[in-house]
Each structure stands twice: as C-alpha cells, then as structure tokens.
Image (cartoon, rainbow, N blue to C red; front, side):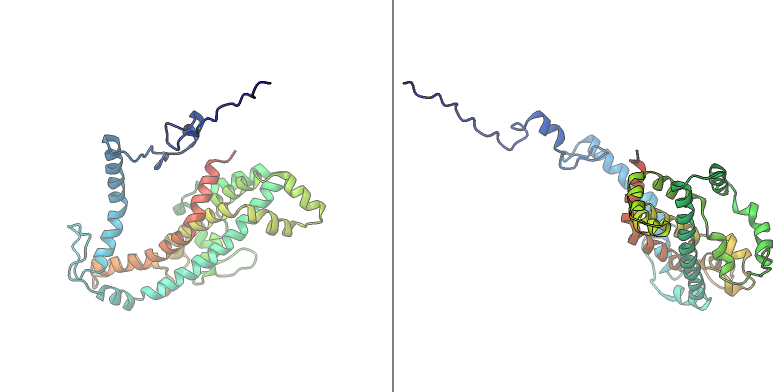
Length: 314
C-alpha cells in the first residue's frame, strides 16, 4: 500500500506590497491616498501641491488675520498690511461698546435665531409637500420658489417697505419690530429646492410601510422623513444662518429708529462716524464675525456630510 500523497504547505505571503495579490494592492489605499493624489514620497509634484495649498491658505486667511490684527491695534494703518497687532489694546472694543455695538449684536442674534427657526419650519413643510405629494400646479410653485433666487434685493426693496408699513388684510405696521425682518426671511428658495431634491430620493417603500402602520402626515414628517434628512438640514441651517446674518438692506428699510439696526448696519454707521478710527470699525467686524464662525464650527460636520451626500446622490 502506497503512502498518501501530501501536498506541500505553501508559505504565507509576507505582509509586504510585493507579497500581496494584485487585487489587494488595488483596493488597499496608500498612506496619504486622497483625491489630490497625495503620497508620502517628497518630490516635485509633492512640493508643488504644498506650495499651492500655502498660497490658497494665505489668500483666504490673510483678510481674517488683518481684521483681528487691526482690531487689537491702537491706530491701525489702512495703507499697510499687518498680521500681528502693534501697540496692542482693547480700547477699540470699549469704544465700539460705547457706540452700542453690543445692542446691535443682540438685535442680530434675535433676528437670526427667530428667522432661521421660521425658515427651517416653512422650507421643510414646503419641501415635504413638493417632494412626497403630487398635485396640480406643483411645477409652477417650484418655479416661483426658484424665481425668488433671481430677484436682487434692490428690486424688491421699495415694494417690501410699503408692505411692511401696511400689511395687507390685517393692516399692521411691522416697521420698527423684529417681525418686520423675520417674516420676509421665513422662506428661502434655495433651502426649499435643496430639501425637495433630498426628500425625493427617500425610497417610497419606507413611506408605504409607515402608512400601513397608521402613521399620519405630521408623524411621517417628524419621525420618518426628517431623521433621514439631517445632512440636508445641516446645510440649510448653516447657509440660512449666514444669509440672515449678512442681511443689510432688509434691516435698514424695516427699522424706524437707529436702535433697531442690526450689527451689519451698525458697521456702516461706525465707518461713517468721524470720531472713531478704523480700529473701532475692525473691532466691530470681529464682533460681527464671531457668531458666524461659531455656527460654522458647530455644524461643519453636517455641512460637509450634506454637501457630500448631494454630490454622490444617484
């Protein structure tokens, strides 16, 4: 009886790029594998990418560094560029506070908070109706929302001022109140369009299964649709806040008294005040910039996720 033939045991391939299979080498990312083609081997291309990134960083960071430097400088010069403060002082912020910058900041926070909340509610309800229901005139309504993005503020400034002074039907004068600024910002065509397209991609089977369980419209929106739209809501929240915060013409025409101004309008007042210097204006700009930075830092993950989800949709 012959002995059984035993296949020789092949040694395991070493855990090196040469010992891996072709498929593994294709699917295993490099250490610094990115869309820009980064790698860990310095060279001409690597140095060029570093140089381009430094140039882009300087272009975007230079204005911020200049603003912060001038805000803490006693007498900043408008003819020279400085990234570090000279003769550091906090007197610019003190003078800006004496000019009422903190009161203007409070007005802006109230308007931005109330306007963003109203905008998200209205845009979410409108997007849900346009995305998950079919009715006559749906395309016309969507077109009207899109047309609002094409109208500059200067075109509607005078008609809007007349409407705020005497609201039709109810005949209320909203000038001089926060509602005169919040209500016109209650709907934004960009948020309606983005949320509508995002909600349309939600599978209909999820909604059908929920309706078989007796889920109503509001519960469907709150418990089923909105949790799936968190990335889009993050984008709408960040961009909506910045849009409201940067409003200049609307707070100007909706106010009756300088105490009703927002911080963006107050900056123009500080700029024309002959008794204050450019350092005070830069200090006010820093104060106006901080809330936007805080909102972006808190919601940057949702913003990036929402943009990436929209880019890879379909």
